[in-house]
View 1 (tube, protein in one colour):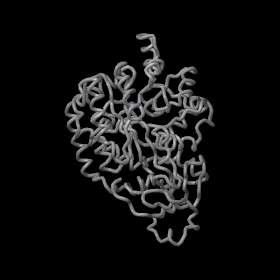
View 2 (cartoon, protein in one colour; view 1 turned 60 degrees about the vertical axis):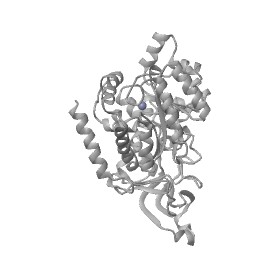
View 3 (cartoon, helix red, strand yellow; view 1 turned 120 degrees about the vertical axis):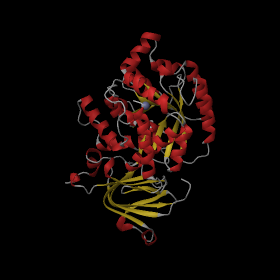
View 4 (cartoon, rainbow, N blue to C red; view 1 turned 30 degrees about the vertical axis):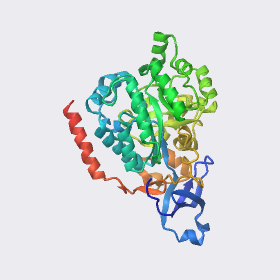
Length: 441
Ligand SMILES: [Zn+2]
């Protein structure tokens, strides 16, 4: 986001602004000046001066806000398919954590994050919350690609190659926060890993520094029913009760997963305006459980979407995630009206912006907001016939159909090509990691 991109106009078959929900604007144009949306208007109403701007004609395309991926571990894209079809704790403790202990360093995280950004840009995602070790490498990868992100600073009791103790995680997080303070497009959050991997002292330090900096806390919480049952058995206290006692249950909490929730806990979440990052595909793949999205929405809770890491998904496709969220909610409530296509799109965009505290800048196409935009090509035969563009977007399209992705008015991806990223060089580096990791199996 260093260069001010040129002014231009996108002329699209359909513009879906996300706000108001469900609106589809046929044959509309988006005027972009200095990286921001200046106007959205019928193409035949463009003024002389607007018509003189460079234009991108998208006659078969639906154009909407860039997707906001509210939970992921980008560097884990290097472990896509490394250990599948396993139960969560077996997957983590016997497969993922050992291989991470062996290989994760600054260059691993830079390459893995770059790979994730390549996939996200080609799938229409323009902003992501990321939690991983070596956050400086995550920041470098995001800045190099002009990608927008909330970089979550990890805090965990286990020693790893980034920090040896819980205390050192906090110390390094403070240094990192300071180093990216002036970076446009980057925000930070504390990411204590989960209630079962962070001590009370660790949480207290997180709350104190998060309050001091005015930044959110991003936390895996109630990921499975057994996590809750184990905490109750071992300590007599539920994870949520413990979190509340430690002062974390506020509107600055971004709670990830939340598959195991009692009615009383649902009301508690709603009363404190906690934001939820729902990761349906990771929850399904790891058989973690089902987040009660419809009940949360009925209680007025903001629910956004995340892919989680590619090692438990196994892709970073937000359109796929939106479809999964809609289908999972329908089947789990036995109510086909639960989570409409428009609801699913809101969860993938504006709800994510709200969770990140960025709703004034991104998450919808509105004059004054950043031009974070994606275009979906509806030209393939599987989009025909086309009665309802929004239905087609959520129930037919996937990341493979994305033709363009802009962030702050800069086109970063167009028809298979990246404007900043050297994809051949990245592919070579990824192959190198695969050989190293495979040689180790
Ligand atoms: Zn996660």
